[in-house]
Length: 78
Image (cartoon, rainbow, N blue to C red; front, side):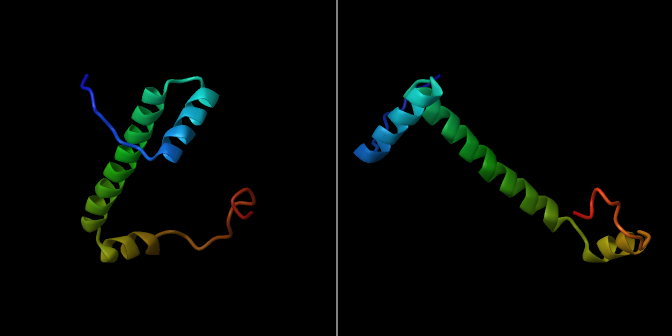
């Protein structure tokens, strides 16, 4: 594990302290989790963009043309 020196505005630091206290975790754990969540979101977006680039509109429309045109199941029609 490595150490990182981080400068935060006082207001953000105080908010982090309050949230950490409310969550019963350390400020370090709160910030680590927040960074992990942000990294996960950015990596997911990048993955989806790459996957979408491999897609084909023609193939999509071909597959969708095979789906029968029937009313939605009542549970799905809400």
